[in-house]
Length: 186
Image 1 (cartoon, rainbow, N blue to C red):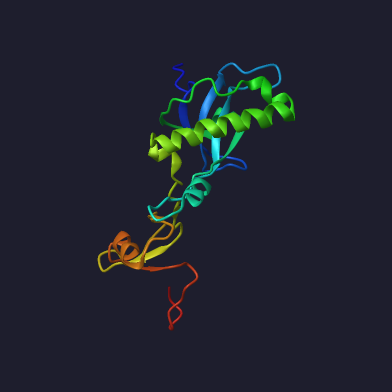
Image 2 (spheres, rainbow, N blue to C red):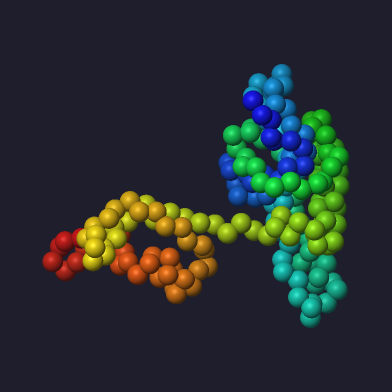
C-alpha cells in the first residue's frame, strides 16, 4: 500500500474538537504503537486563524490581528483529509504530549513558527478559514420539465448573497418537504 500521509503534509481535521481546522502532520505512525494499535499521526494545527490586516491599522492592532492559536494532537488517519504539502519541519516530537509543561512549550514554539510563516506571506491558503458547504438533502425542486425531483444536492457557501443562491439553484423553485401549498399539495 502506498503511504502518502507523510510529515509536512497539510491536512484538514474531520472529527473531534478541531473539526474543519487545518493542520500539518509532524510525525506519522503507519503501523501504530503499543498504546494505539492503528495508524495515526501527530499534527500541529491552527485553532484560531489570523484576522485580515488592513493598511490603516496601527502597529499594535496589526500584531493583535496576526495572532494565531494552535493545537497539537495525536489523530487517527481516518479523521484527517490530506491536502497539498507545506513545510514546517522539526516542530515537535510525539513524546512531548506526555507532560503538560512540555506540551505548552511545544505549542508556543509551533505558534511562533506558524505566525512567522504567516508574516512572510507563504502558504496563504493555510491561513484562511474553510468555506463551509451544506447539502440540501430531501428538498423538493419543481421545474416545468420535471415536476418533482427529490433528494437533489446543491452546495452553498455560508454568507452567500441571494443572487448567488438563486444562481446555484438554476432558476428552480425549491420547497422543503414540510412546506405546503394552500390546497394541501406539496
